[in-house]
Image (cartoon, rainbow, N blue to C red; front, top):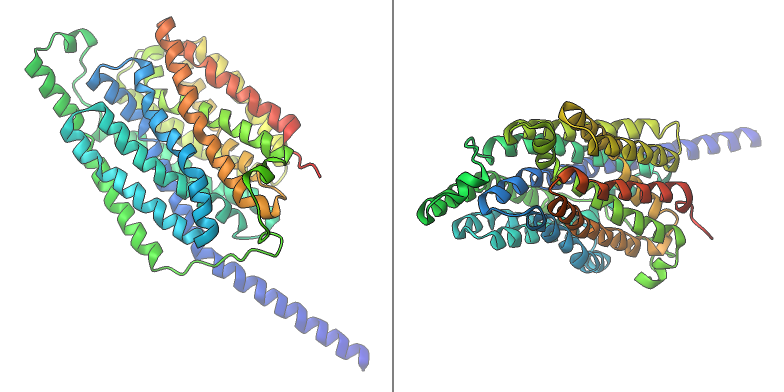
Length: 434
């Protein structure tokens, strides 16, 4: 009888635990969907850059180095805002950080309208800087939030899944941007330089005005998302006693695998920005096609990026995350080499394959970098978001090499070296040390 009562009691406890687990999963489902949508929106605005760079380059007659300031203005904002974002979230929570980020995001999108009216390149850079300040908040909040919305053992797969919608945006954005931003009129540099002052002013006005519509619509959509999140109850993720202990950037920096992750993320983001931001410019030169045609292939690169994320999420069921990262880094190096020294469709397909294989790098480096950090997790998240500043500086190197050699393909030596650093992290630096 006593054994029967114990068995029944154990059964009730097991059933109660199962019910609580199911209830917890259900309570996380809608927030997971909502936060995952943010990955799509910041992916969309980032992947308008490959269209925006050649468009502004042509409109304002910029060099490759000057046009790379688009990326600089975006990714320097990540560096400047990552620590404030982390501190605000530590004090006020993830939801507040997300809403602040979305407000800045929408504000920057609306600033494209006066930027187009002024017809000055620097104002476009300013609008992009404001957008990126918002994205710094969103990425600082959303990445660790996704990681903790479920079991710790599936955090890397869950983050890769959410980041896959960033890849979906990478497919859609260049196609939409190519349709509504890039001009049907293809003029050579010589033709533009032959314009009179009045003709040049009108040309710049027409080119600048084409960005108004896409960014106005994007801003309105983000305002709607702000309203939706503001009136949605997100789970309040409680920190345990260890996480409530005081943490500093210096304390977090003592973790060797985090230091490795910050370095790897710096170079990976630089590589991604180089590959994707200059994709249209690259294949126009290497394959001799028009910018509108190139925008279609940029969309295919985005599709490959998305499929690579889904494939990586699936393969992580069978391979350890660091092993898959190492394989993908090697393949990215291989196809970057092919793209540098080939031409025609082979150069296009090689870059599309690079987009596929680099797809898992950001979320995988991020999740490996914050693994087992306890109270240092939020500060580590800020450091990893700060490392996105690689996207500001490394494209400048690409632009400089392109300008001095007269061949943008040679500039892609920069992302080739970046993928090598990621390989070293996956091979040697990922493992937490105690």
